[in-house]
Image (cartoon, rainbow, N blue to C red; front, side, top):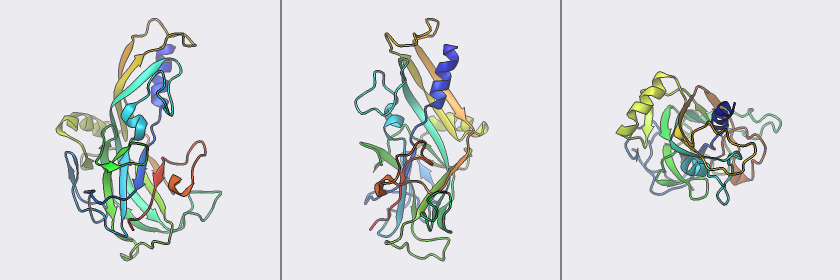
Length: 266
């Protein structure tokens, strides 16, 4: 039973996926709504300008550092039965990105928004265990650029209104061979090919190491001290009107979508 429990704990360990719109004067992302291609080490395109929206993605602290045992200072989560979990790869497939009007129309139903005013077609493939070139939303976090949204491309190309709050949404879809690869290298090709062939939208690789001593319940003596794992998930999801902690939102359990932020370059 402990063997099954170990697997279920790792499967249930969700990582905060941070898709955020932020500011940077040195980013290089796909321009014109994110339709550009990318190559090893980053995305191609032009930096975001004033009045445009920069979209980035990162795995935050847990995606980069994993789950220490004993828990490191300020560590958000850990496995109480003595297992340390470290990741080698955290591949995710991000689908279409949307910006809509009216994020606060119905406090009782966050999925209610106004009309979509801009979109970026996906999918994108990213390894969230790798550090990107831009500041992320978490402490000491480094993010990958996904797209620059220049204007309201679903509303006649109007400029974004700096005094208006917008709803931000995105989807997680099955990986495809034609996806824009962000920060990936030739060494990722075999893993991505497996992810595509099996229809995964999330693919985790890593190692669990038992470091407990007097844990309760006691560890199964038949388990190895080190377990290498890879888990693929077919869990396509759409996130609508994400909470923005920069505006004092969030704090509920469970969150309606991964932590995000949306702001324009001023």
